[in-house]
Image (cartoon, rainbow, N blue to C red):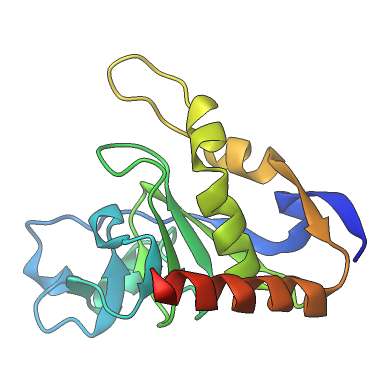
Length: 168
């Protein structure tokens, strides 16, 4: 198995975030059907649902909102949940405290989930700010890790870790 040092931004097709539609505007939330992930939804595992939903109207009115597809990695950039992770198993929009990484087809999102989980302490050490430390999207983009060159090797590792964590 051969490894290369890979920058997150080179492994990703897209790295983005979101926003929070005005909470006092019922047109953005009432009868909403579009998943809207807040960092409190992150559980260091698969994201199967979100507590809040937004409407198509909110999506139309806020250009910084976009629907991210399944298998994107989400990391909380600040607040009480800083460093928490989730792997989308549903398409979802996100708030501004979440950084979303959509990996290219040559990278296994589950492998990267485990990699980020194992490197949480290191990632948190890169946070800055006094009262409320944060990790910027730029910090996430610039992270570099040793990664197996072949996606099949990444998948083998993530399946092995799935089996081991299932036992726990």
